[in-house]
Length: 141
Image 1: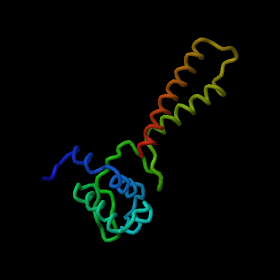
Image 2: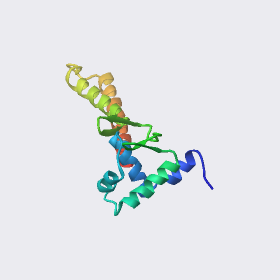
Image 3: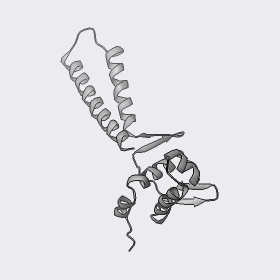
Image 4: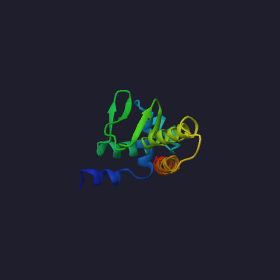
């Protein structure tokens, strides 16, 4: 019995099948069975084909004449920069880190005021929270 919808994706995307999907997603170009086998150090091409077949049945990848590509993106919080895939949360971390550097160098007042200290604390907290979320997202890759 075939299941449809988001729950079916959760059933398919586990273990080695998830690794295969991530690899195809990160490549950003069509990949062949042998490339997947070598990159993921799978024991045989038939094992790679087995996991590709699961992804094809779930509608997550599609086959073209040049290989397999992702047909449906499930990693909504990722940004591809050339061949590198980074979590979107990293942009917030960069923003808050830049704001902190600017506040500590360019916007530093001659005498410390409570407003300046409060702003520093708020930016530090925002930086820490965004860094935590970024690291969590990276571990999930």
